[in-house]
Image 1 (cartoon, rainbow, N blue to C red):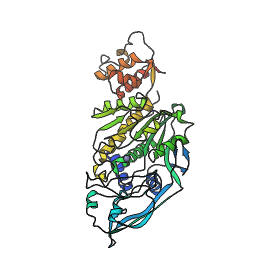
Image 2: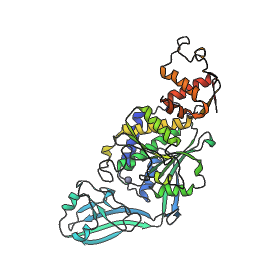
Image 3: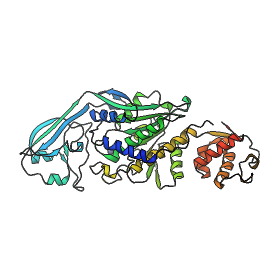
Image 4: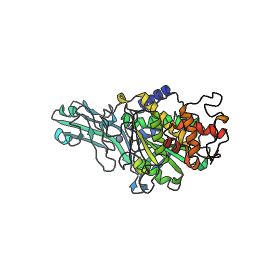
Length: 438
Ligand code: ZN
């Protein structure tokens, strides 16, 4: 068996620090489906990893969707009669409904109110609103700020453009050593402005994982995709529609920087190798975690796992979107991000990569009864060779199940032993001439 990865030992602390710093830099940018905020985000990512950008013109039909016009915004405000900006895009891009068309007008408070979005039951936070596919404009503010507005006339300005341009996604492809092994797709979305857990944490974890893997010898080809939500994966799928059988495993990464436990949502296939690998890594970690069944609700996995593609793409999160307080509001700020949560997510992904790249099937070359392990130095009785009960059980499990049908991952699952223990046992049995790689 070729050894592709040693056990991952990322510099956890520096990975967490770098991921957090990346989020801090990206936080203020006004990302959306298209526009300069996405491109500026790619510029920052390119300081860490090289990206190939693909531009798809507005109006391009992708399956049942059409790539929208590009949106850019320079400034926006609601100003009181004395010129004071009572709502100001420069304070946060959340204050403008994403994809707002340009406007410059004077409105009474009554007229203005129809354009203002607040959350009366969370009066201190600014909601995040979008209107990608129907033309409108609006502002978002806290309910408390709305209640403080005096009757009178207000100047509203949205200095935006909404015109034919491009949708842009960024990719990094790390070529594997075995072309026949196929591709592993790691995907995250890049369309949210000034929200931290959803979705900057996914960008940071994916970028750190890509950086970490850049220097390693890999068996599979790893493709990292940074694309705006929904229309981005659809466009990528459309562009790659003739080569999708190369995608053997996939993972969507989102909402992964808070202090919640890791949560894995299975692919539509439910028992794809990525599902089994992730569940085994989480099991072996002994940390509290959740595994959720597939459901066609959530993030970009909805497109990858639509029935026409049915790609084996799972989703790794901490607290899933919609479950954490402050979801899609200004309360989803950097305050709730933990560097160690980001680092832990990267480490978990590296363990999954380790399984995907080393999982193999072996054949027991001595299947008629148990081979004598002691005289091969593989058992306690042999001259005091030290091996733990787990290691001894692993030898027996690997020998017993290596009939060409079960992979190392299958054996780890059936035996209940850690994957790393099973893998080490298989390597030692192979070195002792008792196993051959299938
Ligand atoms: Zn979101």
